[in-house]
Length: 389
Image (cartoon, rainbow, N blue to C red; front, side, top):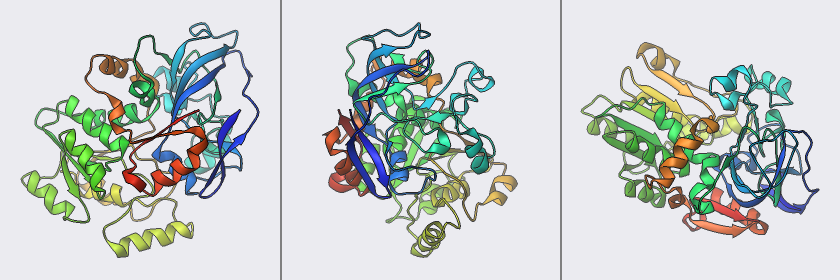
């Protein structure tokens, strides 16, 4: 089959690779009908996530048709149309029983490696690093889905792929970011990052009852999308973010802040940006945390900072003093996608949200390398790329 493979920093290539096959009784094989490039994939593309190997198949946002099932899979059958969550979860361990699917205790075969970086191991993830299992991803014609009796959700009506594809990751991720904010009527929520995850966080915050959502970015085309969802847009290269947030909140700061940027944050301040870029390039830190720092420093006293942007390891100049002395609550996590699938599918069916609004580019799988470059470099106002095998 054809699959998009990581070949090194800044280099992906569509190659012929062996077809996936059933390895365990709980496996299924899915013929991929739609897949997407995620901002998290760009961290791999840019070489900031360790333990990648040449030839690894990328992609953790995918859906398709079941073409084979293992003998222990009772709830799926050949021909079923499914969306596959990016975290692989067993459904039976202590974490899964608590609904914490992205930290499943049984799906990362390289847990010992993850423990060296992270202390304890999270779940295995499709198409990511070997630290997180080394599972082949879904930017391919076919994909093996472990624990298929736990993860995939069946799509049994006429909803188009583009309406449901993002149930695999970014829609529930943005939703979870808003949910962590414990939104109450009258709340003002600030979202750093107007990429697809930030846009879904904006939509989720309004659906949960926020009075006002402020979205912070520097790309006008992304901020326009957030504005169409009702957000107040701030271009951090044009305005002083702190002053603007204080003006909007009578000097208190937002009730909750969402970091939807993660480890490759860009800064308006050239000196700070150069400082973190240098430390990252020399591996003195793995992540550029400017958006997180700014979210913490601007959140109101006693507020919540929710982190859904991806971080890989270690960062510098973390304002722990602000967190402790100002009674802030810090929440973070890879999304527990399986927990949110049915409620969000219901919202799509009811017309509360149509996730396809984030898509700007559609390409065949063969053009995945062009899609990666376009998405990373913000060419042609690229917001989200969907690939069709």
